[in-house]
Length: 298
Image (cartoon, rainbow, N blue to C red):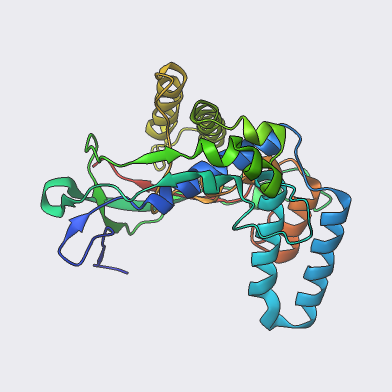
């Protein structure tokens, strides 16, 4: 990708927009995170079924994609799905987020809203305690990649208008509740609760990133204090924002923690065991991911 610019999403006539599906996906992740934080997790039967699917996939590599979809649907289904009065469960139908409709944003002219930023990869390893021994002396120091990549980005303070609606009839109608099997807490689902869940997720992300970057010593060769300050300031903005304001991470560079409920896995020994087995953290038992993509201010 050297000497190339990765382009922002546009229409065929060079207009920029934010996909409604991207916003809905980010909201869905935040709500799923809240449900898991509140103790709504997979039951033993669901875990057993997932383990069986994974074992079958191990025997046939071509089933891996199918298995991944099943596992994702099962986990999301247990936290976001309902309990229909029959065995004909379909996550697309019995998914709480079907009551939420989000349209693509308005279109804006690209030359009025886009800019170019240089992005550099930051690599920093923070060891974690596992049964695997990590020699601290062998851990490379934090560093930035020398060569940046260049990206089109939507400039700060640009405003897009869009439409979000919540179908309360689908939640509260007696016939809908009977056929779809909503739980009591799902019937009480609201935009206010969604906003609270989304901002709580955003605050936890900011605290996580602040702790991550703050763990490295200051160095003139790798100055990341500006990054720490960014997340500290952002955290205060989220804490003090109006009740009708939410903070989402969208688009390229969001990272694994912001696109998943990975924050909940960090202290799980089974997760670290899996990371070591798959060698996704190289030869070190360390926090995952060990890289961040950061746009440069100059």
